[in-house]
Image 1 (tube, one colour):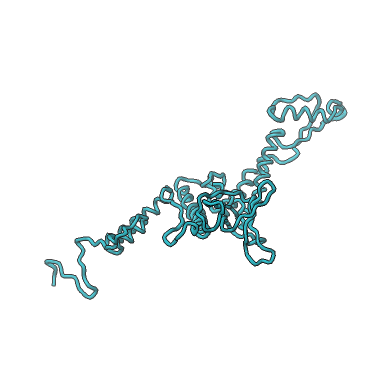
Image 2 (cartoon, one colour):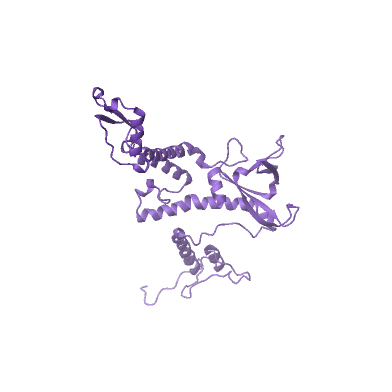
Length: 327
């Protein structure tokens, strides 16, 4: 989880390989994998540019440690235009939108914390009659805030002189903060590739139904989650799998067979493969590979399944006429 969060938030995530000998050489077996926070690791290279990445620098409590390149798995998302050795999160293009959403939350919190209403001006309606006009303005302000701020929001306030209360700023309804905060939600969701409906954001729930929610979940898997899984699996195949010896028969993949949103697609694959296999179009071995089942190593699955009521003819032969058919 930390790896995925790092990769999505910063564009870079790191694993350190721990090997089974003190030497930690490239030929020693990998026995452990440790996640390292992205802010504690960075790629390094020689000043003359003779190597793209020579090693990584691991910083702990201000001290820098050299970690050889073959002992690091570096997951990248995107490309940092200022340093192509690093990834760059797609969220980096939306910092202004994230800031806007954060400011909207701060504005709402400020309204609720201060008075429960926007800023106001207390002005005497007639200064000649005395009262508030001669009172200490700071004391009036303090009294008003004590009555309407914090846990005392909504308590009555009695003034002894005619006073005008004027709203200084827009009300929350006039500012339409709800609609203002939907735009960042939609843009962040669009960049990540997951509908706001799927993660329960207001921008998506307004248009959510039982039918399109299932379609949105499926789209999230197909357009975001599975592509990300394939990219991470490809990084592991290149940077980690060779540490386990001969890799011709090995690969890295994510098991999505238990994902309910993808069950319909899997059932379609099964039905299509089964139809082709039972009609003799696929060998039993090919059928098993299609549905993810193991194939017999003795070759017993290298056969075609042909129904007994099928008539096998050559390409130039004509089928016999049925009994009682007209000439």
